Amino acid sequence: MADFKYEIVEKIGILSESAKGWIKELNIISWNNREPKYDLRDWAPEHEKMGKGITLTKEELKKLRDILNDMDL
Image (cartoon, rainbow, N blue to C red; front, side, top):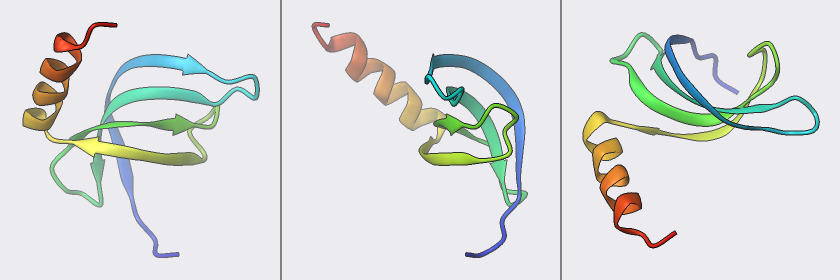
């Protein structure tokens, strides 16, 4: 697996926590010193490990917000 770097620029919020202590978070993260993006994924308690996730630009996050607002939940 290739090495990569990340920096959590801003912690926005926690969506849930599993019984094993992993936390699903929305953060702003810079991957490999690139421009930060919104990132949604599971993290181990001390952020030493991460699960698969998705990254979104600000425009993509706004579109997702609009889609969710239009849903009848």
